[in-house]
Amino acid sequence: MNTDVINPEQGNRKFLAKLEEREVDVQACYQCGRCSAGCPITEFFDITTMEAVRLAAYGMEDILLRSKTIWLCAACETCATRCPNDIDIAVLMDVLRELALRKGVEPAEPRVAAFHSSFLGSIEHWGRAYEIGLIAAFKIRSGDYTGDMNLGMKMFSKGKLSLMPHSVKGKQEIKKIFSGKGKEYER
Ligand code: SF4
Ligand code: SF4
Image (cartoon, rainbow, N blue to C red; front, side, top):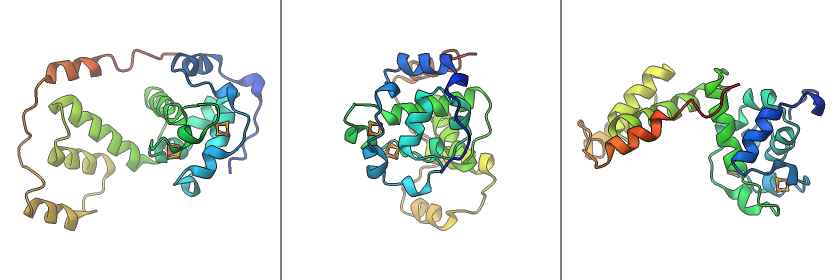
């Protein structure tokens, strides 16, 4: 449970405009709690799903960007499916992660952020997830050099991890998608 004092008058209007642009209508929330009740990992959150939506409606971006919740959300969409007002909370979490990265807010769950960055880096560079490269990038970013070593060795011995990346079509198109990053939201 987050205990920061909320003052709607201090809400960030630009943040609210950004949510509107992504069609996340947080103002429609009437706090029924169906989203939080259905979230499979709510027990690990420091801000519950319904609290996150209310904080977003007040424009309290700074509290949200510092939360563990935005990094732990698995984007399963259960909350959005259960919401009677069609509020897409998974997109809200996406927007919050993007903002946290662009504004240089230290992720409250650094290993999750390290995995996100490594995965996206792999897609940008290779056009697909190149597992060995992804694992190496994650280990360097997270400093976790020995975790899941046995699992990795098993996968490698069964041919599930290839040493070289497979070629894919349309790599340039994929790179173009990434070239627009960072320009969409600036204070
Ligand atoms: S289910 Fe929808 S309306 Fe209900 S608390 Fe969650 S976001 Fe708000
Ligand atoms: S999308 Fe995220 S917040 Fe929504 S139910 Fe899934 S894990 Fe929970």
